[in-house]
Structures are given as C-alpha cells and as structure tokens.
Length: 248
Ligand SMILES: Nc1ncnc2c1ncn2[C@@H]1O[C@H](COP(=O)(O)OP(=O)(O)O)[C@@H](O)[C@H]1O
Ligand SMILES: [Mg+2]
Image 1: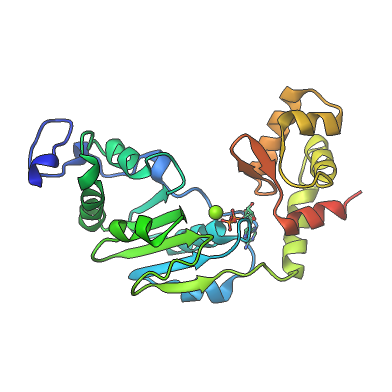
Image 2: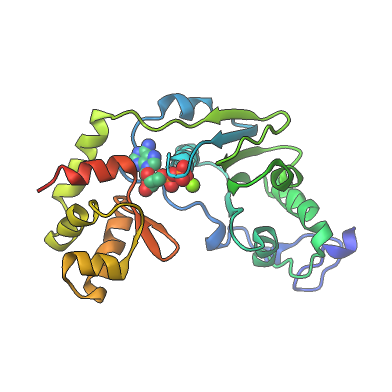
C-alpha cells in the first residue's frame, strides 16, 4: 500500500502533504453562528476522544452545535468534511497533495492522515454507517452529523432536538437586528413571510429592489448568521423566522 502514498513531489512511501502544516481553507470548519445559544447539555456531552454522532432533522442545529463545540475546544488541527459534497475524501486528499490515490485506498489513506496529524474531524451530513465507518481513524476525536440513525459501533449518539423557544435567543436576535442597516432589516422582515427557501430573484421581487443590492444584503444577513445559505438559495432557521415575523 505504501506505493500509493506518493505526494506531488514524488516521494514514495511517505505522506508528506507538500510540507503543509495548515489545513486547506475549504476543509477548515466554518465559524459557529455568532449568536449561538443554548445546547449546554449537548456541548458537555460531546466526547473528546472517540466518536459522537449528532442526529436530528435538517435545520435543527446539528452543524451549528458541532462547530460551536470545535470552536470552544479550539486546540489542535480540525478538519471539516462535508460528506454530502462530491467525492469529499478524494477532494480532501487532493488538497493535501495526495493526487492519485486509487479509490479503494482512499479511506485508509484518509485514516492515516487523520491519525498522523491528530486531526479532530467533523464529518458533516453523513448518510449511512457504511459511508462513515471506513473513515473513522483508530484514535482521535470525531463528530458526525446526520439526519439518519447511524448505530455506529462504539459511538455516542446524541439526538439533537429543536431549541426550545429560548428567551435568550430572542434577546440575542434583537441585538443583531438593531445593528442591521435599513435595507438588510427590511429584507429580514419581508423574506421571513416567504415559506421555505428562496433565492435572490425571489427576495428582490419581494423587496421591490434590484438583484445586485439584494444579493449583497442577503450575504450580509448570512454573515450575521440571521440567514442560512443552501446552494443558490437562502432559508431561515425556524426560530429566526419567528423572530423576524415579530418585527414591523
Ligand atoms: N444554538 C443555536 N444558536 C443560534 N443559531 C443556531 C443554533 N443552532 C442552529 N442555529 C442556526 O440555525 C440554522 C440551521 O442550523 P444548522 O446547524 O445548519 O442545522 P442542521 O445542521 O441541523 O441542518 C443556521 O443558520 C444556524 O446558524
Ligand atoms: Mg447541517
């Protein structure tokens, strides 16, 4: 197997990752929401060392919880892998300079990389135990998020429930809201009446403004964690939507 561990400088038999010490930007965990609230019990339960699976419906707050935990922990290198992306493991290995690992060896090379670099892993959006199990390193800390029930061996499973209507969240959202420029505040109020996800042209139509102004303003709302970007569309967390609808 060692002959597949060839880096771009041509050194066979060793993983050298082009001498990088850092993590390629696309595999660094994004920031946790700035107004993160609650989840004290879940944050305390996530394991340092071993595997924790955060399961629950889409939008409930699994990724935010995992990111907050990683951010609070803040030590050591952390890898964020979106398992819903196209060929995530191949892409990750490539970004570390491991460009021609045969498909059948990728999981083993990934595990080896994780152990050698002592990465804390966030495997986001897992679809099945079969997808995750081959990626689990022999040691280290792994957090998995999933909408399914995975029943992984040796893993702690935490069911992530919807946040209770936390008065603190309301107060924190108010703080973010009062700082919004008028265009952003208006979009925040108006788009919250749109059920489900919406894209830039829809938001522009709702606000009666041009697409380019609206695009920047929506990006700003995402930046402030008031809105979530999903592909080309945007959506509100249910609690944020409820907050926005109280505003006039
Ligand atoms: N505890 C929290 N405090 C503040 N915002 C949160 C919290 N949990 C989730 N959110 C926000 O709700 C939205 C959906 O959460 P996310 O973690 O992406 O859900 P999931 O991963 O379960 O689909 C995001 O905009 C996120 O920032
Ligand atoms: Mg998620």
